[in-house]
Length: 426
Ligand code: CTP
Image (cartoon, rainbow, N blue to C red):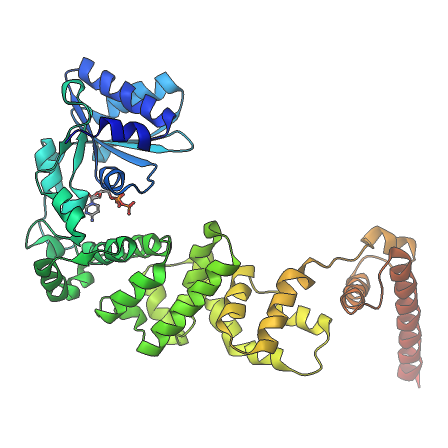
């Protein structure tokens, strides 16, 4: 099957130009280069994919450097793995030498040695990811499909290439389900059996690798489908979701998509995913996915908000009170809280804060207060805060009104201080 015409319709013009240059550059050095993996699969499915993976039977880094120079783009080189990445802005190209892999023990990274294209395809996860398109000039566009990926694509199945696949690399358990759910395919019978048999092998995967896979799931269009299916298969032991929780998650993820843009969803999804957990459950998750720093803090804050969210149900809450209850939470945590809660008063107050209150600012500056005779320091800080509260509650609107209130507050404070002073002398 020749796909050169399909490539023309599928790849952006600029990408085609680069691919053609790479093909030419490689053949001048007597090397053979191929488009592989996801891009071949997606081209055949007609799904957009702008992360082009290329495999070369030869020196990938030298070729990448030559192309980077020609197109004046940045290249990241990973000498240890013999790979390089070229970033063209609207698309990227990953170049790797064709390799052979062997696994010394389950879950470990494989031992890698140079190999042929066929060896490179046979080491891959699933047949639909083990196809290549030749960029060699005299076979340009020919599909290379030794694992019968095209047949599986047509049958709409995910199939591993050998029995040890999930045991060698248990991240493939998550990957299999991710593709199954993304493409609405089925697991081939043997693959399904092997997957279920090897679920415990997920324990052989390091925390960093499993976190990487979780991030990939969270970037899917409908991550809840993969997460729920993994949970059903007991392949997501850290976040064990009951049937009810799965339905809840599906509803809440849907709502998140409805309200926020695709680019900002991954973190929000994660907050919603851990929302049903206890503090101990979250501690286990943070450990398993080796999450630290700001990301871990956001998840902790999510459970803190959950624990205190009932405070937002108060009947007579002033806008300034809502502001103070919520001002220290990261925005994404509040978004998660608003989506997660089913109590209308809570949701509307969280949304009020997000859309309005957090943006309220007073007109006065410290300098304005100094002009009114309020010196910098504790007193000024308190007066500024009172001005903000007044603004939030609609008691002042303009700079003049703020200055009037600041003067009034200053006078009252001075009076109170004088009274206190007199009392202490008596
Ligand atoms: N691969 C593999 N085993 C893994 C990870 C990746 O065999 N554990 C191979 C697959 O052939 C895959 C390719 O490496 O197609 C590139 O991996 P990745 O970029 O993760 O996948 P894509 O196929 O590009 O898919 P996606 O659309 O999810 O990015």
